[in-house]
View 1 (cartoon, rainbow, N blue to C red):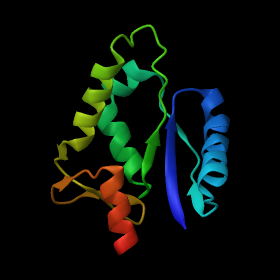
View 2: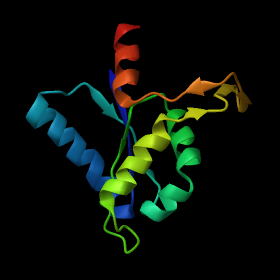
View 3: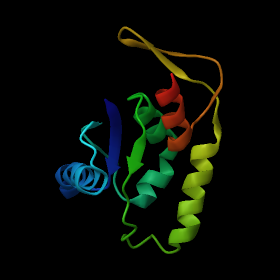
View 4: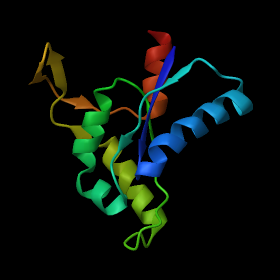
Length: 127
């Protein structure tokens, strides 16, 4: 079964987004085999932008493609295209170390490059 991790802005999104994802997958794509994980709430864009790398690494520990749902309706969200391009560039940057979990402890491993959702999907379907 495929997995998908939604990341959302607010409390209302915590319940609404997983339902919307399931409905779109089922009604538009005929997919019932996707396990939509409980969403992570990360706040509006200014907060996300400030802590993007930490949030992204935390989400990657779930070992699932990420669907980050932002509506850019905050007062500080002026140039949506510029902000979107910044987020895509940040997600494509190499990360200094990979976090490896062993039991209840986390360890830092060799450098890694973050994958785009398309790359992650190819890797998991061909493994």
